[in-house]
Amino acid sequence: MVPQKELAAVPENVRHNTMRVRTLSTLGLTLLFGLTLRLAAQESEAAAHIRKLEQKWTESYKQRRIDILSSLLAEDFVITVEDGHTYSKAGYISHTADTSTHVEVAEISDLKVRMHGNTAVVTGAYYEKGESNGKPYVYHDRLTDVWMKVEGSWQVVASHYSVPVKE
Image 1 (cartoon, rainbow, N blue to C red):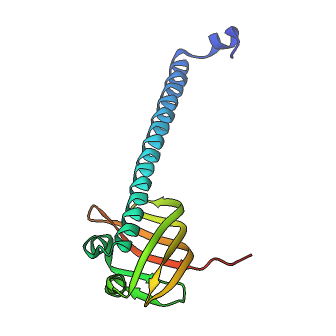
Image 2: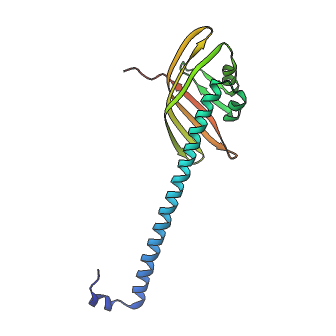
Image 3: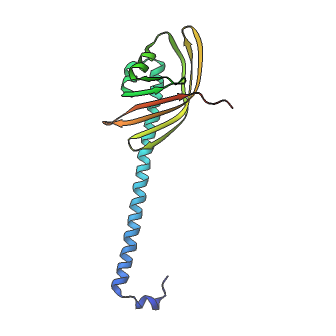
C-alpha cells in the first residue's frame, strides 16, 4: 500500500493509468483462466470419447464386426503385433474375419489418453483369451494406439502391441 502523502504526489492521470492497467490485467488473467478451463474440459470430453472408441474397437474385434472396424480404422492404418509383424487395414480386417480363431475374452484396461489437438495417443493393457485352429491361447499385452480426427471423425491410424517384460 502506498502512503497517503506519496499518493498525493502522483499525478492524477498516472493513478488512473495504473488502475486501468491493474483492471485490464485482472480481466485478462480471468479470461485466460476461463479459456484454460474450457480447453481442459474439451480435452477431457475428447479423451472420454476416445476411451469409448477403444472399447467399441475391442468389442467389434471380438464379435467380428467388420463394418464397425472398417469405420474405426483409417485407410492407411498399420498395426504392429507382438512378434513384430505389421499389417495394413485390409490385413487386420482379414485376420479378424478368420473363422479359425475364436476370441472368448478381449479386454482393455489401464487406459491413459493423451490429447494433442486432433491427435490422441492411448496406452494401456490388453488381455485376450481364445482358441486358434483348435488350440487355446492367451495374450497379455501392452498397447499404444494413435487416433486422429479427420474430417470430423476419429480414426485409429497406428497401433502397437507388445508383450510386457516379466520381472
